[in-house]
Length: 324
Image 1 (cartoon, helix red, strand yellow):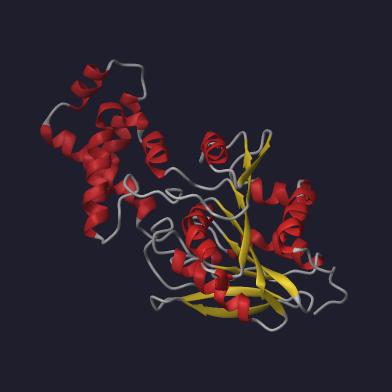
Image 2 (cartoon, rainbow, N blue to C red):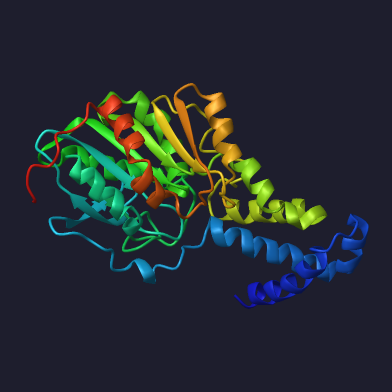
């Protein structure tokens, strides 16, 4: 922790210098000595792996918001993690929808979606990924291990009373989109999964390209940061993000992607690339919408498109006849 704090302090000062339009040789001169380079690399490793490996702050998501009729449940993964979740019952015999949030977030993010889906008659399960909210875990792997969380959620909802387990849909945002994209090929190949489609909001994809863009501001030091981060990731038993990609294989199921054109966290160009590559992927760009707003905007302004997609691939559900 001390090394990380010291490295970050040095990096903050050096970042200001490197932000100016200097040639690469002057940037290197500003770093100067080998100890300075070491601090830069250490700072880069700390910064990069904070997102890759260290659990986000969980305090804000310890008390997820709920509506009347919902109930808290606990999911159990195949690698022995307990996950906090909220179940919203729908109409008997209706399909089920699993909602997966993004990094440093929680299941409350999808409360507006749970409400809309409940009104449409669907059964809904939203849960906290490992390392988030009320779930166990202290490491975030951007889909490598979180696929087990999604499988646990699907399995629980498929067996819930009143749910048509042969008609399961998925919806996810940001890192949750990466988790879903990574899991879809296996789910598509397993008829017992019941999963028929997915709606993704600004999903993280094409990790090598995304990571390269995120560290490009470091200029000639970017390779050092990437290599150092890869060493740390492997030491933690993970595949580096530069060597693993949730979209390495086509999804194998229909996917609707909604992405804001003003997204500065995950460039919409990545979703455009995904839609151009895979025939199963349909892309809807939302003009002027940023990364964090997209779940709320989609629920408020583009629900007709989401509802139509789910109806096309899940057969729809009768509107909820009475509160539960």
